[in-house]
Amino acid sequence: MKGALVIFVAMVVIGIVLYVTDVVYYRKHHRGNLPDDNAGGAPAPAQDSEESDDRTLNESSGICCGAHTVCEKTNLSPLTGEIVYFDDEELDRFKGRAEDEYSTEEIEEFRDVLLTLLPQDVAGWSRSIQVRGITLPTEIRDELLMIVGELRKI
Image 1 (tube, rainbow, N blue to C red):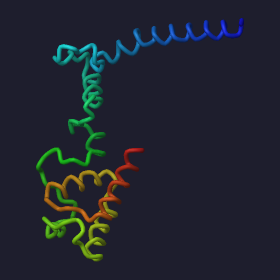
Image 2 (image 1 turned 60 degrees about the vertical axis):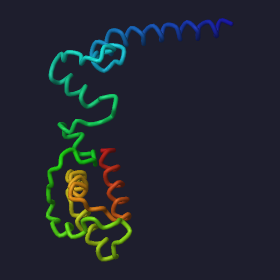
Image 3 (image 1 turned 90 degrees about the horizontal axis):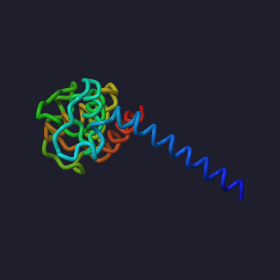
Image 4 (image 1 turned 30 degrees about the vertical axis):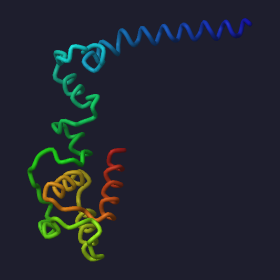
């Protein structure tokens, strides 16, 4: 019985410590990110620019604003209609083609471009391909998703 009482008291003490830590530290430093804090729908005033950047990156919707390097490196959706070429202008001839209509040689052409890109350019290349109206072959799309998944882990 004494053992159970000691465990209960220890759990209560740990709970109190965690609650105080939450109130004192977490809520103070992450004020704008709490859903209860901003019930009126108006944006909370930024304390400083660093906190504002953190809030933008950690939006509850999960949509990146595109203004940060982290977002640009891992976001595969086109944020703008701007076309950026990665020394791959020859791929424009595949515009409008379905993903299963590529020959082996054409798939290898896509693979050569993908494998010669710098890691930081992979997501940008994917966005550029989408904006240009080119559908990637299924094999290349799978490889691209695998590469971007690995980059996200870094």
